[in-house]
Length: 418
Image (cartoon, rainbow, N blue to C red; front, top):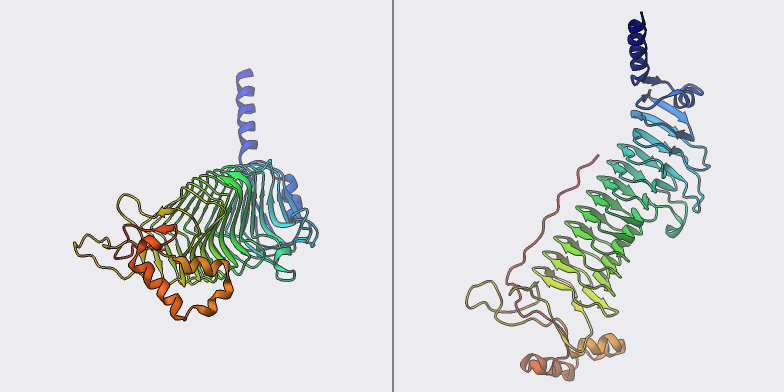
């Protein structure tokens, strides 16, 4: 009898531990009741329709809108708040967050207790912040469509995805439009941001104090600035596209020991790349094309290496003022320059003459813009001819001693609509 009783107790405990599958209709308090009664491991599936928020998730579960459910907030605070680990939120349209910038009102927010949260395949429209990953470790935010607000000045809007102190989190394959910054990262590390598309924003990706992370395969279209990497070390920026970004394609500001590899920065406005007090970074196999300035160095950026990049059709290929020569070639290979008229008599793919992007007149024009009125004068033409004939007259600056005869152009994967 005692053995039978013990066996029944084990069976009863196992039965109560089985995860339940909740089927919830958009009827009054049904969702709130399900969230209150659900236990760890349960799945709540929402029938098509509109559900009133805000809601909180306080146990590990799956909330699945099956692509047809809509949770609408009351325009106060965040719409979906995740307070438990191992929660999945998917397939839901989320609207109606508040507008409090100090509290970062969001469509979905995962907090410090929500480690390993999975936020996927949702549509977030008109919220101040789309998804706020706030202190969550190893979260994944993927394949969401996020459209921010347009009823404030751009700097007063929220970010598409905000990542703060979220070690090991990943933001993958999201389509982000409008708002302020597409992805804003602050005080985080060991993150991955890959395969996202960002349009009509201030910055596509904005990094602040985010070390040992990866920015790979993203697409920035028509933003004010593509990839702003600031106060960060050991960042890999690889295979990204910046097309038509107004100010800069890539900006490195106090960013060190990072790799910038295989990116396409093209058809921009002011500068393809702006480097401010950034050191020991490696640039290779990038395309910098059709900008007013290909690369602009300032504030003492040193020990950066450049090789196998292609500079094509920029009005000024490089803007760099220095008193010493900086060689932009590594291991006998330099970069391709579309305005470099040179020969390759030995057929080794390396031009026989070095390339110097700037001369004395460039330095004069940068410091004295009024001198532009003299550009067509015989005196200026004589100075430039003299420098080409007698390189010793050239000032310090960038020199590529092994320029390439043909470009090595990176390819970027086309965006696939969600």
